[in-house]
Amino acid sequence: MPTRFRASTPEWTSGAISEPAAPARPDAAPRVRRVKPITLVRVAVFLAALIPAARLVWGFYTNDLTANPGDYITDQTGTWTLGMLFSSLSITPLRRFTGWNELIKLRRMLGLFAFFYAVLHMLTWVVFIHYFEVSFMVEDVVKRPFITVGMTVFVILFSLALTSNRFAIRKLGRRWQSLHRLAYVAAIGGVIHFWWLVKADITEPRRWAMGLAVLLGLRVWWAYRKRASSRASLQRAAART
Image: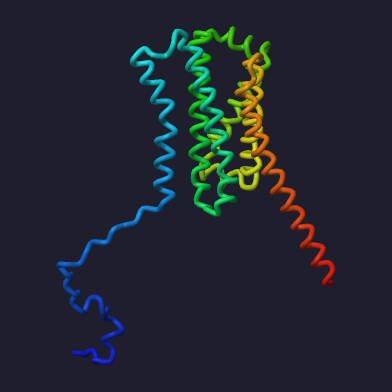
């Protein structure tokens, strides 16, 4: 019967199998998995974003939504739609200023919360303002410009929420980024919708407009600097040849 030589043994025997495992030290401390700071921030932002909705639910349960609950819920949900949308658009400037690139992980969540509050805003308009009367809703959209703009913003947010997933990113490719730049169009439309709604006292919509002007101004400035840097690089490359 053939026998295996001692020299050939390592080729078919694993050291991990042939050698007994070292006994675990009883006094060794268990490994503690560190939680990343961005994870804590995401949890905190998620819970904070739910507070306005929780307050509305509590107000409905305790019958504390003012004398006109329809208008109150409409105002609150509209305000928080703008708040979440602006927060989402603020992530890129914050990332650039702080250098903390992981902040980008908050943008999708905040954008989805903007759509969430937009849905509540729309449902309030359907249920409490028009009581499911489709003909009145269609007439409102056609004849009242601020409703027309608001409906346009809702459609944009719906399309952005629908494509906020990896499958859509793979399918759309480069078009995905172009589509999601419509978030700025939605923000502009949201401010216009609010401005035309209040008519008289425009203090609050003016503040939103100023914040939007800052966000758009930063984006234009960074785009200008990027183009200027690319142009300078091309000129330097041309000068060397």
